[in-house]
Image 1 (tube, rainbow, N blue to C red):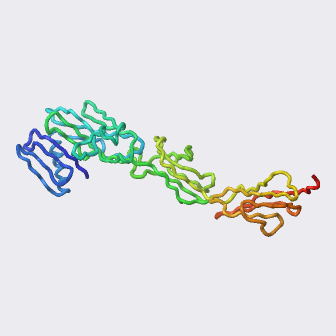
Image 2: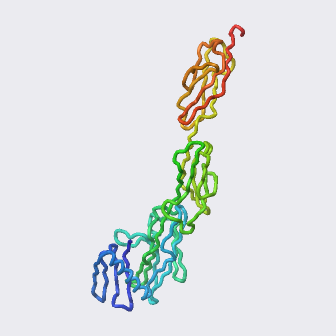
Length: 346
């Protein structure tokens, strides 16, 4: 628990001025012209501080927050509200919210804090209500925020404790299992990273694949998963569709498919010339082994993605196909017919 310096004046008590420093080791109070220092253990001092707060409320000083904790989404906006009271003989001159105190023990108004530049607005009403609005929330904005007001009389200053604890959460996508093979099942789950949303504890999530809406559910079940399901997935809370989670890539492993053979040069093959056959296939992980076969011939003709036949003869005529293999499976191409023409017939 963090308690910042608090000063106050009680008009109907011998206790006229107190300063609560940043540490929990001491409390300095002025009684008449004398200063009294109280030093105690942290836990005891906390109790004492709450007692002081109760005394202050009895004497007209108070800050009441509409809530003491809020969890909201990164990138969204939040409003923190409170109402405050003070003795009728005082006049409030300054009001602000703060989350930290500088090295000189000055309360830093959020409107003057460079970390919040352009993102903070204050709003007050005639019934001593005050609202802080923070836009474009960042995870670094997670902190405890307190309202403070200053009056026209010396020592007439008050900070409301314990304040409002703001937790800013991002969204995250989890893929289970992390590695998936075509035909298996996979689950994608969307959740907050640090806390449960205060205004929507059981949200409906919108799913995006490669930036486009794909589904609306808390989890995305792909069973069986196919290579077409691979892509970049993100999620958002319904009502905050512009606030996407970071993308998570779903990688689907699959065996070779769409395996085919091409020949170069194309056109008629003349005896004595040369041709090169090339095998292509789509696979994940990539094909690591290509093997060439000639139909009706048992043993392989060659290995490698390309197969060249030089000084070709009529004996080389026939149907050729390739086998593509990766760690998942293997696949054969359709056969390619090569007819070797007699050059004397041209």
